[in-house]
Structure formats: structure tokens, C-alpha cells
Length: 127
Image 1 (cartoon, helix red, strand yellow):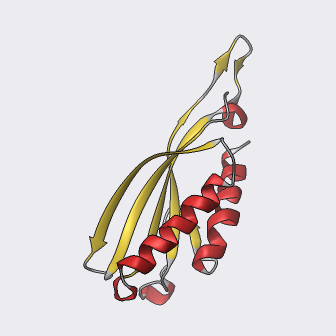
Image 2 (tube, rainbow, N blue to C red):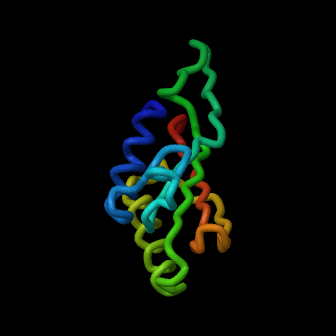
């Protein structure tokens, strides 16, 4: 499974939860304005190849660390944000055992007035 394939799986799982606003690397900002919320972005934080006697398998056999950032308007409240987070976790879990939750960080962004959580996933393909 290549990085492109992993990206497509994340977009298919997370996109419907955030109105299709699931992006690679950055939150899209139309005309410099704040993006509509909720939204999600994902970043490939690292890649580890799986070496073997035949060399490494490249992208298709690599393990990835992916960070998924979820953001929603503060005014919707903490309970609504936690419910959205729970839906994202369930959608990622439905992708199978290849995607393993490895950590989380929560924050409030004062500039955008959004609640945010960063979820770290390990994507194991080498097993």
C-alpha cells in the first residue's frame, strides 16, 4: 500500500465526518478566509522502510506515522467536539488493524476559535 493509497483511505474514512473537508498537509483557506469547520488534515510524520534480503519494499511495504488534526468551531461546545472525535476514531478503527492509534494532543486555537485534537496513528504494513 503506497502513501497515496493510505491517503485515500484516510480521506474516505474521515471526509464524510467533516463535510468532505479532509486535506493533506494544510487546512484549505479559500481567499485567505478561515476554512469552514469542522475540518481535518493529515500529515505523514515519518516513514520506516521494511528491509529484507531483497532490499526494502519502498512505499508499498513501509510503515508510516500519520498525524490527523481535527478542528471544529469552539461555539459548538465540548460535547459536540468529543462526539465528532469519537466518530473519527470509529472510522479509523473500521479501516482495520493496519491503523493503530498511538497518541493524542488536545488544544484550543485562539486565532481560529477552534477546538482541536491531534491523533497520531501508526500504519503498519510490514507485518
